Image 1 (tube, rainbow, N blue to C red):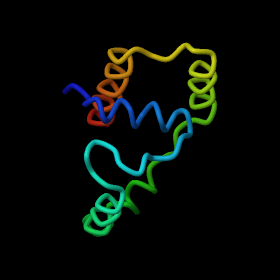
Image 2: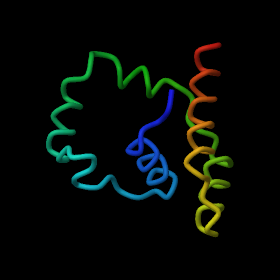
Image 3: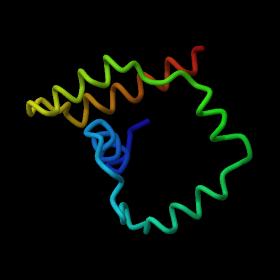
Image 4: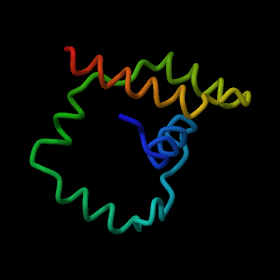
Length: 90
């Protein structure tokens, strides 16, 4: 599975702690908000029950980005895929 460009951009934005753009990937923010209302019951609660990302790792990545050491698209894609594989093995 190859992450899309939008997924990579959103991941980098989240690591930089930036707000989600009003319009991203051709979908207006208002439409995204409506889509959130259509999620299956219990999905958000299930996600909230998952452990939070390790703060030290998030800070490490933010420090790297701040110093211009952003991961390449391939590095980021490999980490995302690796995380998905690990989650499925649990």
